[in-house]
Image 1 (cartoon, chains in turn green, blue):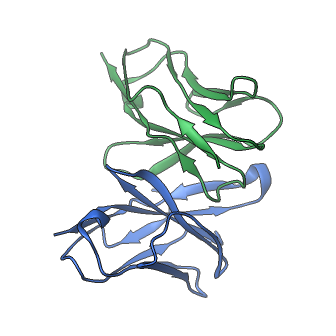
Image 2 (cartoon, rainbow over the protein chains, first blue to last red):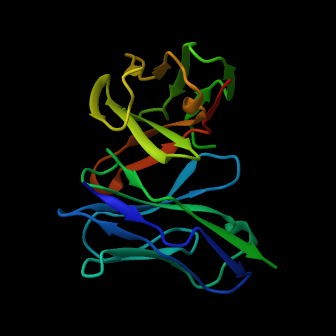
Image 3 (cartoon, helix red, strand yellow):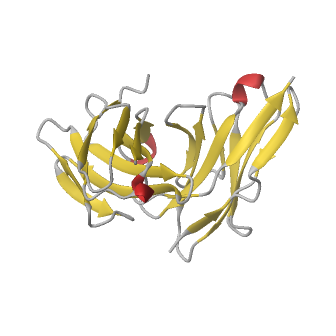
Length: 113
Length: 114
């Protein structure tokens, strides 16, 4: 079975500063990895996904995540955050695409001016 | 707007009752997924349907059931409700294949069991 650990429940950061949200996974087989964002009182939005190929994946709004097989990590980074990035971020893993996603407990990103 | 619609937005009911949550996927998407988000359990995958057929089950209780109809909308039925069933229930749909496949979530139905 797969599992996901998001070590940081909350990450406060100032606007325009860089941020890294950590995600580690556990699986005995190859997996697909995802990051989702949930803005207050909204559903989740797929931010980016790793299926295979290049280990660095990027989203359209400046976030990127790097798959590191040896460290079983898929950390999310952004070089300069905006106030509008304030949200909860969920890392997820599965063996079969979007089926049977296993989510982490989430990291609340708080961006202040 | 993700294109995935869920009704109702809010639902308040009593223990022991039965409710039905409805989801309409994005136009053209054949897959529908149901998830539960609660403070205790976090986000959990419940069930996946593809073009009317059940494809995968997650942590779905026996008191819960779902189906996907020929017009591709889906319903999640929750029966013999307990206090612990209070949660946000999300529906999502996906389309495309391989690396082009992407998933969209609805706004959720907030269920409160009193």
